[in-house]
Amino acid sequence: DAGVTQSPTHLIKTRGQQVTLRCSPKSGHDTVSWYQQALGQGPQFIFQYYEEEERQRGNFPDRFSGHQFPNYSSELNVNALLLGDSALYLCASSFSNTGELFFGEGSRLTVL
Amino acid sequence: AQSVTQLDSQVPVFEEAPVELRCNYSSSVSVYLFWYVQYPNQGLQLLLKYLSGSTLVESINGFEAEFNKSQTSFHLRKPSVHISDTAEYFCAVSAPWGTYKYIFGTGTRLKVLA
Image (cartoon, rainbow over all chains, first blue to last red; front, side):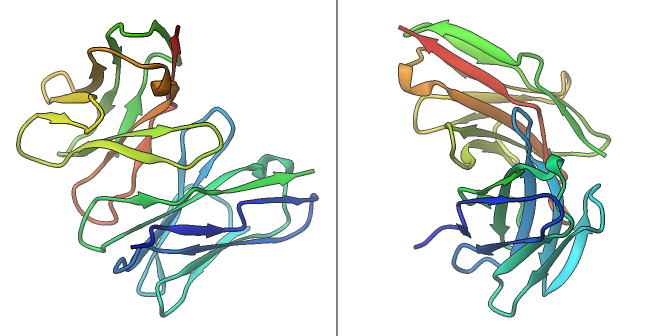
């Protein structure tokens, strides 16, 4: 049973560019959450998708957007990248009616 | 709203010694509590969880944590650590309903010394 998979694992962008990160949830899970983990910090909630809709959003600007597809996979898009967007981006999946999150290995974004 | 405080940013301990990593939370409602471990350049791995029932929860690799509602704590303990336990440990809390958004602490870096 494959767990949560994320791609790419590492990427480097320059300021002002746009990036798309991808996530495939654990088999049978219908909900995907995204977290940002800056260096030396705990993960911070970006948003959660369920039934292809954004269900809840954390304190992140509109430059951060997402999408969930009918197969429950998800994308995180960040526009107009800033140096401060450099972080590990973690995807987590779950069943909609349970509180257990399963995390992927993350996508490490470096903005130069 | 919930919040989590991990008071110790770093905890050095000698191999085979006991360790306690502290976690306190704040919430006006009941909560779910979690401990995650993160090895360098890796994602988060669930160590143990408290959802309901017994307040003492254990992991398969010797860690345990006790939910203390009166002290709003969920401290992580291990009676004898190994070099391989060196990692970052995160405590997290969520409400037991809704979107189950996790609020994480800032982490405690456990360094096991030979």
